[in-house]
Figure 1 (cartoon, rainbow, N blue to C red):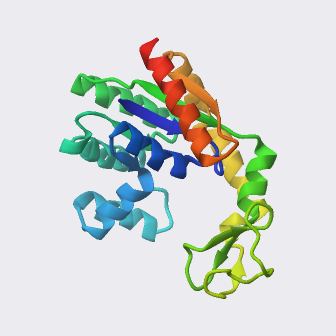
Figure 2: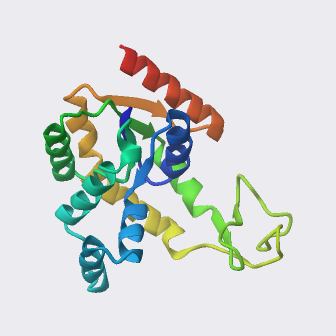
Length: 219
């Protein structure tokens, strides 16, 4: 199964991508992982991407697309893949279509994780991270520490990351609405979009997504 996963920041894409890829036995291909892997291995694409990033510029679509193409051609992606963070805009979606057509394959579905905007803001802006270990994550509403500002695991100080501030979250949402959301209409025109509610326990959202994908693909 070949799937594109979309949704606003805070909709749980990263968590669901990992769980869905495992359930579907396909690799989870995220833009962030692609960049990190290429840069750490010092591939030509990685060096090119780093040169743009070091200069404070956005990495051009063609570099991102080339990285995605290289990853999708790996043996473990023969049976399918789950794309997370790519395509990020309509031009990338068009390039992906062209790439897949050249390879003689097509997408099975575009899974759209819906989440109310205010809930997204609450989810992200309420996160608190441990300074000693960023894997220790708490939330002012959903996972409160026993003592305010103190990590339950190691006693480290809990803090809010700069990119988790409400102002930054709303800016990220605006970027999503402007740049990424239009790909949903692009794929709706192809009859590929499967929309699910991303609110609720992680396990329930995964089950909801798998059931929706199964119905859509069989249909």
